[in-house]
Image (cartoon, rainbow, N blue to C red; front, side, top):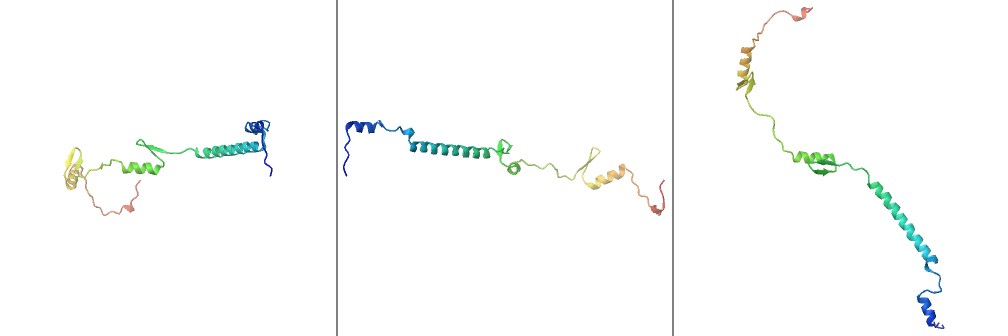
Length: 132
């Protein structure tokens, strides 16, 4: 093959692309830009769709300056960290009319003395009488 020799002017023209078609008018450049724009638009569209799916309203529970993702977690935290105490009392003393009784028998005897309760026995059959 014959080797082509270039003059100095041709070398300078090739280096600075003088006399050639501009790069933005070539088919390769146009297809490259089209591909970049298409991929960018696809990426932006996909990102918007995914972002809109993740922005649903989230329900959370705030208790004791802590945030919980579910109600059961908040209730579990409250039950585990609650201060509990018994509100009942264990005593055998009874209070009636401002008097304290040490046991139930003494209270019952006091009630029998204060309120006269009498038992009347009869041989009558209550089913035979009509109350008018």
